[in-house]
Length: 151
Image (cartoon, rainbow, N blue to C red; front, side, top):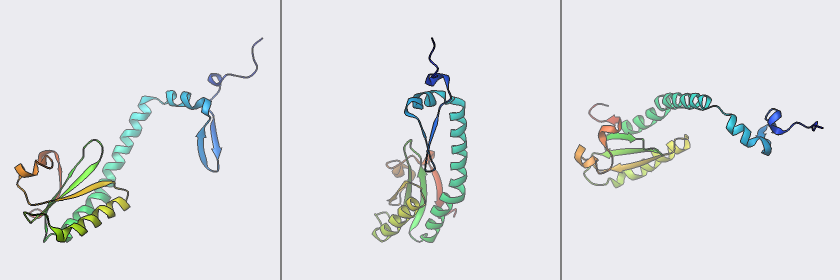
């Protein structure tokens, strides 16, 4: 005689509700993960990418550009690179040496961005031509957020 208790495969995946937190029963976790269609995942990634683009334009870029403009007497340009694992901001100074007077302000920008949930690394590099910049990053594949000659 067949069992009257359905197997986990014969019933819906069950959620656990605990003080507003949603979980999945341990026996259903694998079924849940395997049931996620790749199209949904792809659509969610596209939504996340669109949201990121919007937030970069409305929040991140204005913060960095405003900071550069406010320090224009010492900042020549500012670039962003996006390697696979994180963003890096390169602040190119007007000096051909490391600008110690700017280092606290660069650290404050880094902290401000982190506080706004932008986990980026902000680095200061001396004034350099494109060839010298390549020692740090590829200018051709970076994003120029600010340049003193273009504002």
